[in-house]
Amino acid sequence: MESHDITPDLLFEILSRTPLQTLGKCRLLSKECNNLTYESRFMQLHSARTRTLSGFFVQSLRRNKYNSTFVSIENPHDSKLISLDFLPHPVKIEACSKQGIMLCSSQYPHETQYYICKPSSKQWQVLPNPNPQCSTERIAMIVLRLNPLRFKIVRFSKPEPEHDLMFDAYPSTLQCEIFYSRDWSWKQSVKVKLPFYERLGLKPAISVSNQLHWLTSERNVFSFDMEKERWELFPLPNPLCESEHCNYVEIVEYEGKLGSIFMKEGHGVEIWIMDEHSKKEWRKRHVMDMEYLEREESKSCAEAFYNSDVALIKGFYKVIFYKFKNGHCDVVRLEEQMFASQVFFFQSDWEPTDLRGKKQSSSRALSLPLGQSMIAVVLFLFLIFLLSFVNDMISW
Image (cartoon, rainbow, N blue to C red; front, top):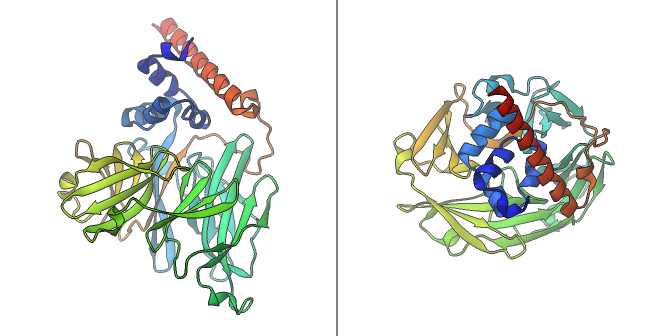
């Protein structure tokens, strides 16, 4: 079957039956495939057909202790089954992937222990400690593949004063360490020297492909390439971020791309995306009308995006799933005195995963070059649809 013979409806049917671990590769097939998988109706049907869990972990800090809860509009009943109570100690969420793998740290006062875990299957694994003579400034993770599991963690840190008396003279310099699950060890990487007094933002990193992004104190984007182990700084769309009327700026992931949002007084919220990271060119994608939302929660702005037309809004002891194209709001009340200081998009199946990555893939497509792998994925998807169609005909 030629690619142009696959109608949008047929493509929708095929992709909505695709397992979560295959869906990421399907998004690479074409722009059409990528955009379709971020539509609200697709995510709702895909969640039901594959029993995929989608939502956000909301984390709050109260009395020097981190607490978290999971919220979802697609899986309200399954949401109650997901928590981090299975871990041996109370933890802080550090990073979260679309494949259901999470990085957490213990809340010990003097020594931090890192864990990799899968909340849906209640599995966890202790990670080796990084350099104990440095204190963590920022930490993030990307998942490279699921079967066998391969992931990388990057840690930016500064030496403790008693170990490096001269380091504090360069306040914008960071040490960099990388943990690779295949070797199950940390290694020293490049040193990062930012412009004087420029800092990485406190919010979790935005992960797009193999790139991790932070908004800096000077409203630049700090980008770290996990494959090449290189970093760079580049600006947000100008002159938007420099306008005195712009009172909120943040970077987000939108439809699998790096995005930026700007709230301008009296002009709503603008969403810009970067189609090609190498070109560093921003394009305005949407303007969100906040008028409908202000009836529910005034002075609010998007914190993250659930899909292409639903933004997550932080409120007072609540979060709001705001469908900004029609103004519909789904309000999720949080526990008493719980304020969403950080949110982490979470998507997962319910299957157990070997967190040490010792299992070998049973699918040959996973080890093929990208072009051949894409062909294998298309054939696999068509087979899924054909079997489903035959089954429906038999049932009828």
